[in-house]
Length: 386
Ligand SMILES: [Fe+2]
Image 1 (tube, rainbow, N blue to C red):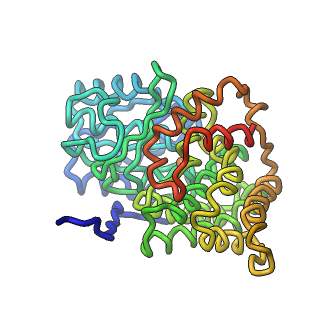
Image 2 (image 1 turned 90 degrees about the vertical axis):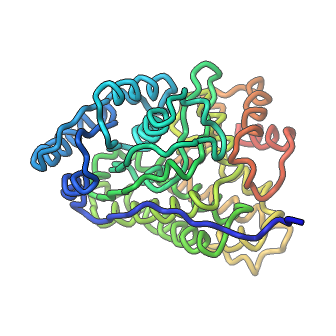
């Protein structure tokens, strides 16, 4: 009889890391033998001059290219389909994502839509992509989403106003070209939201029911790096060394969560982001401490370790007070960064909560949450975060 095996796998793209790594773009594209390159990006990157910089590097390498630059924050299903159509019509054979999570998720969508000739929403859930797409190079300009190393893409189902998670190893990019210098374009808000997203990735991967020693190593290091570097970088946005620390943290968190998956914070943040179109990292940050309080009892020793990283002497605290202590440490970190809590301030009403909770319960990230939640538990967390 086949019993459940305690086996873990670990997937990662080829990773090039360091200030100036963008200069290698032309060489890598040529290594893949590309005929014509399809670049997926957004208007913010066009205005920041980063698209032009990538175009110059590719032109110098003699590479022909086509650009799709209409990705919006929280990429929409119809944008993926529009970009995939352009990819198909332009006879491109390699995809470059330039930007934050939105262009990268959109590019992953273009890749699987073009290979399988199906609508993007048909791939939702885990392992529903049959044919891998063309080579995908990610050039992230934020430090947080880790779409550049993960097997996740989050796409906005605009008709049902919910974010759909697509999880498949076919979407692990071929190359993550990580250049901390590109993240200097981020303002304070974006730095805060993406940095907190990376923290939530690391925490959720560490407490995930699919965690392993391989993922723990990366998750814990990411939490340490973010606790140390995020407050500093927010006061020194032009410091490349601090940007490098955050990019490294995001990479470590990404390697952890891509392989250990996530949990209730992300499941609930996807539901919230679908309803309100808020930045993803902001949704996570709003919910993090309320989820910790309810998750604590499932893996207390793991949350204690997180508390210690945030400076709490857990041994000196009575066991029944520890959940609160870890949640408070995270809450005080949020306050230190100047983050204002409260779903109500973002327009969530009490009446919205049941629908939000129903959508969160159906999200694939909920599967690896360390504690099994009922609808009422999720409603209670949303109410607490209100
Ligand atoms: Fe995330």
